[in-house]
Amino acid sequence: MTGERTYCYLQLRGEGRDTSELRERLLSEIIPAWRRRAVAVWGVWGGLFGVASNELLVIAAAADRRSLDEFTGPAQGIEVCDHLLLSPTVRPVNDAPRDRAGLYVFRFFDVPDRHVQEVVRLSDEAWKTFENTDAYASQPQGLFRQLDAAGEDGRMLLVTWYDGLESWQRSRQFPPEARDNFLRRRELTGGTLALATTLVTDWP
Image 1 (cartoon, rainbow, N blue to C red):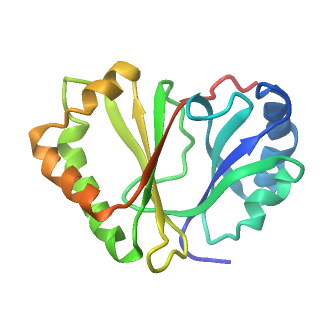
Image 2: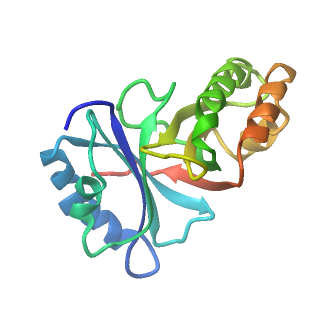
């Protein structure tokens, strides 16, 4: 298949109380199988708030159009708690894996398909001041739309990096220049869900 880049969000749950078994399977089975299919890992995250102690969040990326089976197939035998096929919007601009330690907040929005482009525009405009301030350290990493969404049932995913929880808390006081855009974006979206995570960087 050819066409736009495809990203896949997976919330995976392993056996036991921690992620040790799940990490081992990722390293020994899932990631090698993805590589054979020209699928790269954009990032792996462990939970801080809102994610179980034996769960990992994974985003994988392919340079062309892919089906869900090409991402979930190598994960047979692992519980997939949630999944979402995604297309990138203004970010990320490439598939380079995330490598910056810190807090990553995953924020899911319910967005009717007719509002997606406006949500992207408002976000892109707001970031010009949101991420350029001395009050906190933050950088949106990716804003994704659901692949093949239609009608009222679409979801979007925003992944944002912060250097820590204090920056996340301070960033809730948006710069005045960004406020109107964020408030308008809120009007266009339905329910939201936020997950606080840290990037898994200690791969062998």
